[in-house]
Image 1: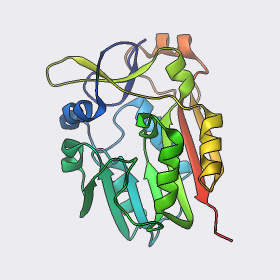
Image 2: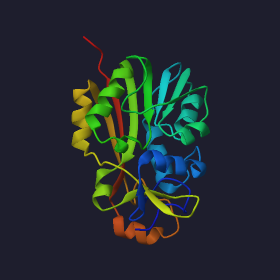
Image 3: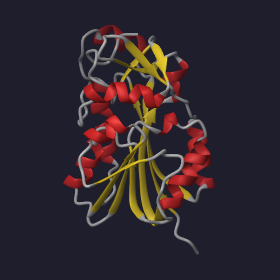
Length: 240
């Protein structure tokens, strides 16, 4: 498959590359991972996230698996009162901005229950091997009535053999571990965790993703209509 961005600029979908454990991969990736959407795929993803963006003015917000902090910047720009940035990679976290940066595994969050009004997570849930466990942990730290907005690479893209990849500082292409989760599994996990899904967006090649890039004519002909990104917004159900 043709890559979706020039090498070393960040998230792409690709068909090849040596696979690394995710912590090592993201530490390698951090130096070339800008804190803004930097290729067509990520720009399409962020547009879709912003279309579903919850009201965050005055909110206690969590930027979960923050990377170098692109959604932390959006949270700040849209009025969140307190922003906590969490990532497992110390190299990624070092490059994020904001006063509250916490190194933690997103499957074991070091926070009390119901302490966040909003949780944003971009292109990260696919790193969780157990989707239900991830959803339970997110729901635990989310206050009743709070909003969850997250994105991930679409399982249909993974089914074609596409992988998440980048080019490291030594010019080697790397792929990161990724677990595809079907939409029905997202719906079930959310329901079981006490979250009500309010919106689902599937970004498709040639539709929501249509920006030109080197090799894009072939890419768009080959994969037209294929969903490549999933965006979900949910709300924690108020306790009765």
